[in-house]
Image (cartoon, rainbow, N blue to C red; front, side, top):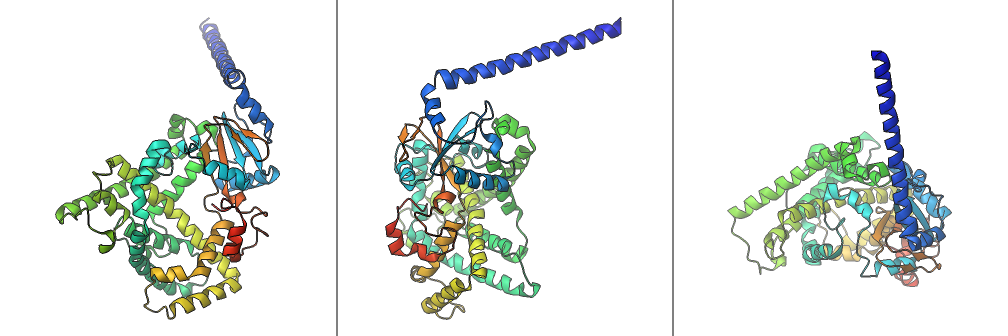
Length: 455
């Protein structure tokens, strides 16, 4: 009797659970139907006209993307080839319209009302906060206005002292490793760039090049891994909920990386503030050019009260600038070196230009005037960023209907995706786009194409 009662209870509870599950699914289906087919008929109508992969309820077209970030990038490249010019993708309930025509991209980037970032950037906010990369609207405008002076030419020229010092160390470290045969240059460049970032932006001395040589610092590791997790999350609708993300293995790893990096940055900020209390406060009207090296953090602390920055703003923007530069700059330099290792013709032209501009490099510091005269080097760097686009795409929230060159309309309420990696390989703008050719950035070629063909 007891056994039968327990069995009946389990069976009864199972039926109740099944019934509730069916009700939840029906409620979700009804919500989607009402939201997208009743109240947003025009939204769905405009979206359905744009070509793209077949979509299904709840998951949209998320099935075409991969969990692995590297494989996912290959999928996106293939999709933008299959659907050139304009295409649409549903990731869960979120609609993304991908455009590739430079005229359409100009229409987006030149529209002052389209300054709101896509909701996809919300997945980066738990890591970087609401800074220049993730922020939108009036708050973003205010932060940009406040921070613009920290990137003026006068301050950047003062950074050359740090550049020369750290690159001299890099040269010595690489020379000491020559007997090892073939080495991976990336960690050496990463450590050098990290030292430069801390020496310029934070006015703090770090010697990771000497201490680590070919190993990578844990700080840089945290930054790179956290960025990978944030990008991966965008293509996993089941992790869109902050609660689900926090409970997932990715969320726990992200929190660990974030905590380490932020604690280190907070320590630097606290130490700089303490140092400033011990020294005589600089006059606010002092010319920046008269100072030895003024970094981002120095400037913000100098003008902290007048720019109306909170402590959270300071930490967020410091973390944003350090994090975004930690990986992007070393990757770009490493890719350029990889190209030079194969293209001896370009390498020889670079050496010839450097010899003409600087003569002997031994113990001679690089000046701002030297940089302005290294025009071929400038073209090689730009071509590197074209062929190996470090920021493959950005996205904006669409706040008004947009007419495209192709005749399609982007519906209000979705996100528009700008795939720079495809834009930079547009054969109408760059003949033989897969060929590495620094002459793509000769002035006559730049003038012949849209100013929005290279971003």
